Image (cartoon, rainbow, N blue to C red; front, side, top):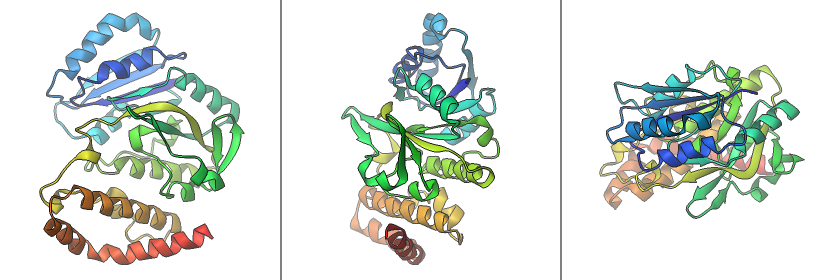
Length: 309
């Protein structure tokens, strides 16, 4: 199966060489590589051009396109623009500071063809500590083994709202391109925009076909925990912390799965805010400002308890 890899690039000069090297080391090379530069202000783009010039033969017949944006609008917008440029059957987004295991693309192509898959979630090795997430044991009630390291996800809309599950971190999804066509990343936000996007894609698949959704274990995606990442960002004022799009989108939804996901993201959001705000005063103001979400959070806990029985 043909496979397109899209890389949104912004100020990752220190990492992009490793990311691109992980692609030319693939046992099955990508068929398309789309790099979308989001108006980098370091020398990221120069590093990319130098790498492509020096290693172009290593990419084989891969169609390579570098798109230079004239306005910085964030990784969601860059991914949307990259997706509009592809023609392959499978697509994945690779962050410019992450890497693929050398066998990932061949493992994915084989699994999609053999099992007629629609959507694959990858587990992640967080570097440099090599912590593997998600852990399989807490998720075993959702997982049915298909082969070594490959699991069918039963009840996927429930699974993705489990706090032990990871989807949308490090762009850890591979899917058939046709399923993305009706969806786009929310380009206005950068907090939990990944899970918002992939959840909508997943719902779209399951609304049309039964869908074969899998978890590919084996740690084929390496996510580098970089100092300037959003998870490590500190804020001076509580209003600087974005409302996650999942909460904004589903705050009035009556759908159980939407409510569960919103509750799980809400819990992470509250903890994230309390960890990254500078003072007790800012933390209290944050909690008071968003006090109307507490009723929905308690509803989430109730629905969650019913689904765990």
